[in-house]
Length: 324
Image 1 (cartoon, rainbow, N blue to C red):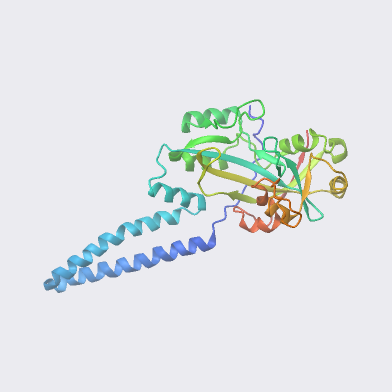
Image 2 (tube, one colour):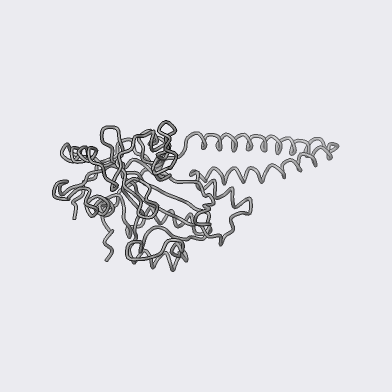
């Protein structure tokens, strides 16, 4: 039985207003032009038979514009930026049905104390990043994805006890939309109702804090989702789609004081970074520090970028879970 099958946390879908308005405007404008051309063509055909040449020209115009109408209609359905980027690459012939897309779907915790963000080092790059990591799925979901969508493990990341069943996978382009839809509805994976695993591993198991001092419960709320366009990644040599759900930890006064006390202690196990430090990835021309030590995905959690997240809710409920 799957250990992740808990109460589902419902996300509201948010459609980008500006881009959708433009798509609707294009579709309506093109439709009006086509209707006018069809009307004029019919009028000429019925009443002015001597204008056969003009009618033929109008028919050619209608034939040229109609595919555009179909195209804009399809674009209107692509209400997520990543879908639009996929469609664009498919039309350009860059993505084929069997082109492999690398996906990495994760969750990130925003832990903010006194205006600074709590970060921990990545075990591979050693750069500082938010607490969190790839979502995991259970064996039932692995079997479904393998048999229904021919999903394979990301061959660039060794599969071991730690990385097994991570949402770092290789998906064929023809299955990508179905895969993302499945990700949002399946019960057989980690979801927003219980995300204690990475928190405990990266804070308690590392000895940064003890569970005894922190307490038996963890509270957080959903902030939204960051999803990239489909782009070629030179490191993994695949076209990629990256997803990150952002959750803000709701610290009690006692828990906040624990993190505040960490600020006074120097340690390579964690780092408190300001928003400006995160946006510059740790590089500072003022102090002549030109080596970046903050991971590139870290800006996704900063407060001022919340409005850029999709699937946001006006009033997000606070989730409280018991720590194991």
